[in-house]
Image (cartoon, rainbow, N blue to C red):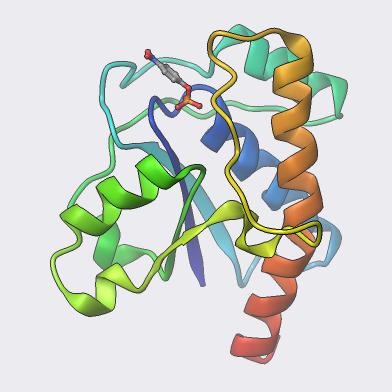
Length: 156
Ligand code: 4NP
């Protein structure tokens, strides 16, 4: 099972979502069965490390991010089983680019699994540490139900 987390720049939200979800996978002992990656709908930051504020936020929550930013590629719609977008704009971009209906159905929103209800993971780029911590919190809160859905579907 391969999951791709997607935001706009792939330097703030999606690398953090990837790291948070990877930790939930690791704690469940499923790292051999579930792999994760992240990408951006835009390529402006391709090749860059995650934003320093993203890495500082990760460190506050005992996570490390070594990811290098990349843009979503057409092959991602085949490679990945699920493309998890952070906001409605990211999801709309992905659905527009999906090569066929089956690929379009792989696009979901991170907070579809939020037990407090659906919504967006807001862009923290123009915000501060509290906004990055809020992103961490939303991803951490949504990860267990995402993981449970995958475990149910895959019989893991
Ligand atoms: P992200 O945040 O989509 O969560 O990685 C952003 C990163 C960069 C920009 C916007 C949002 N930007 O405009 O460069």
